[in-house]
Image 1 (spheres, rainbow, N blue to C red):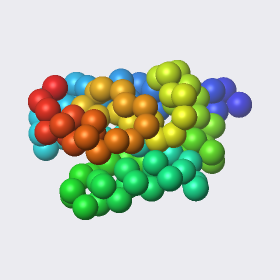
Image 2: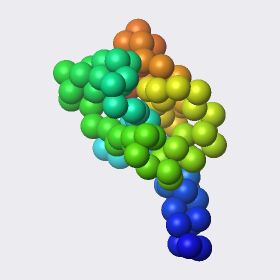
Image 3: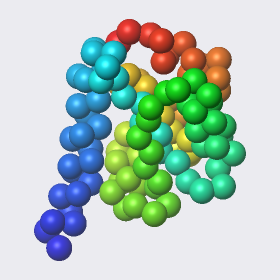
Image 4: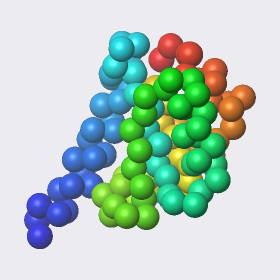
Length: 104
């Protein structure tokens, strides 16, 4: 049981390392917190695929650790993105595109 309590902490610590890695373009990270049947999540995934953007996805409906981390980071709904260490609530191409090319 103790191990299960450490999983959200481990995910949170990994996510906290994202801004530190973002300084190196080869290690920049995009993190997507999503849920099935989320139109904004589907739009974000399609946009990332079209642009060749690598990202990590965490489904908050199937993972308690992802849900806990999402809530701790202030997520209010999906999609919730971390782009080069910056939090973005929702998906809007005009908002996301510049963040992807921005140097942290």
